[in-house]
Image 1 (cartoon, helix red, strand yellow):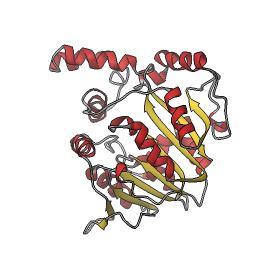
Image 2 (cartoon, one colour):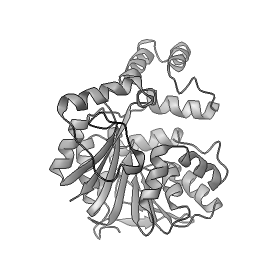
Image 3 (cartoon, rainbow, N blue to C red):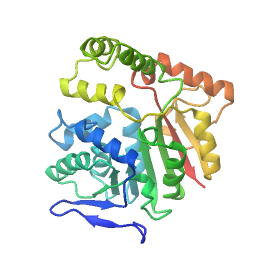
Length: 305
């Protein structure tokens, strides 16, 4: 799984492997998520709780069905590894939960061990250390991660190389258009001095923070959306260029490139890239949907040629 020239160390008394060296940006992100684990386990005790959460999301529930059995899967930037654990549960898939934040991985490992999930390997490292053998994974998942690095384009180039021929790559990024509501609230938070009043106003304006969720979840969401030290915004066309440059075939996206409704049961079987005006309009439309109210994240699915 790991390249021969990469340093690999198993932490004493822990089932966590450390690989490579971390750059300054990775250490900055690690420090942030050490203080602010995201997502947290404050309302989850059992694997049934996590399964219920996953099945409540149309994409993740169909993604697990697509993964099937007998796959090598990596979640790049797994955080507290909730998706990795959910994908491992009830399957013989070999999952790698890979993240730069050691404390986040410890939370995931603790939950996995309590629930007797033993087919997840927890790996601590920086994706730019390029620690994995090219073509090793059947599926590479990387959502909410590349926009927290100094170069999302270069990060994609690395992770695309980890997928085998005909393997799938799923990436999620903050959208240039779809995140404008959040960007406005970020600006307002800074303009008002980031104090209690600023926090109260932004919390009132954020649809997620108006929901009836725990204080801990609200705090984690606020910190992740408004206080993160590294963030960049991207477009569908930018990602399509990355796909072309790295020999990755476009399969589908959320939102769709052609403005058609997303068929979650068929999203891994190929789709239409649409045209430039349609793609732009599709991304602007995120502002008026749940995608825009939930941070403006868009997903693109590709298959390695």
